[in-house]
Amino acid sequence: MKAIDAKLTALKIQLGRIAGIPVEVYFRGDTSFTIGFEGNDKEAANKIVKYFATSGAKNVEAEYDIETQYTAIYLEA
Image (tube, rainbow, N blue to C red; front, side, top):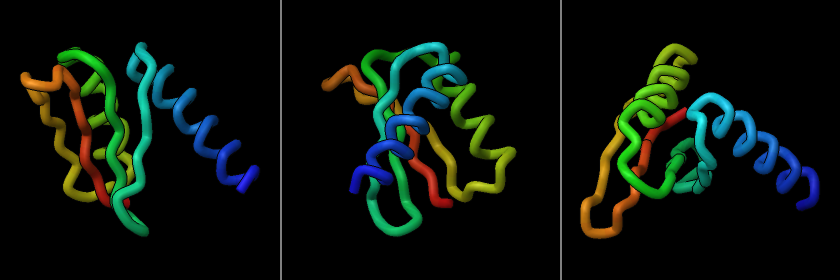
């Protein structure tokens, strides 16, 4: 598990650099993921969407939930 934790931490750091803000990564299945962050930073969301859309990920979409004030980017690898 330590190797997976290290890779997950590295992924969060890399995506945070791309977005310019801290992000969380959630596994929804073997090839489905959610990247999320607090607030409605459209520029950060667009940077992450663009990154994954150009890397071959499928069904990449961002959604902001006004009630929770959380942005989630859904994708399939």
